[in-house]
Image (tube, rainbow, N blue to C red):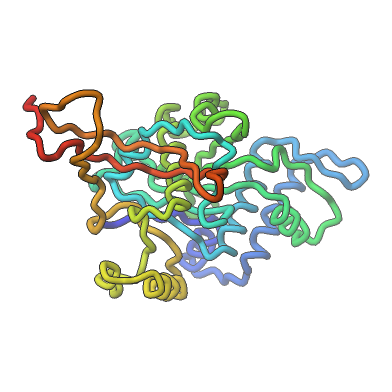
Length: 341
């Protein structure tokens, strides 16, 4: 199955330069430090060498530059989501304390790769536009300070809310810039309140002015995408076998019998070849479980499917620690016949 991979503006610009046979001599650091410097210079008010970005569009450019820069330095971690997993995790409520949320594998930036609508992607806007991929970045002071220091400028930049998450959506929307065809990414900022659930934070999101420009994506679809992204974060930390390292095509047959050490070696081999990611779902994964002996409120005459759901589990010494686990859909009393509809 083919997946749509998120492309950073560094990679896109470099590719367009080569297509147009224009020499390219910029490193990642040079490209993004230049982007940040130009964004700041284009829109600011200056007082004693302190700069506050006054334009929302310029703030977006700086945030995206810092996010993509960090992602490239992390070797571009990604997650390929198979179609059946899109439908499961985009609809699953996240009634989980926000305080338990973690970015997957300790990465402050990662991408979600989705298939085409023909392959089962349900995030379809119209006949020409759908959610192809999503890029996620969690702002953090350490990398922000590093990125700004690389601009070789004495200014400091005030960016709002250093703990927010930003999602960029590739909706198959493009524009022409100096003879280069470049995508337009739609973005959404999220701030989770540690005193509330994640579902509460999602429902508190409001539409903003940016959605009145260009391709329109519904709030309902945005919420579904956010649920999918945050669900993947929990899955990555839960060690559920539904998520597996993405390996080279020649090594896929080895996955079934691979132990943890071999799996790590296969993942590292793929990373050296530029593939640093994980697959969620797929043909090798059994997405459901059978549970013949599950207790119920009364005697059952028919088997039934219990929906998959998230659950907070206590563990550790004295059961004082918490972790979030995904409980797969299961068949209760599979020894009984299913009710005919």
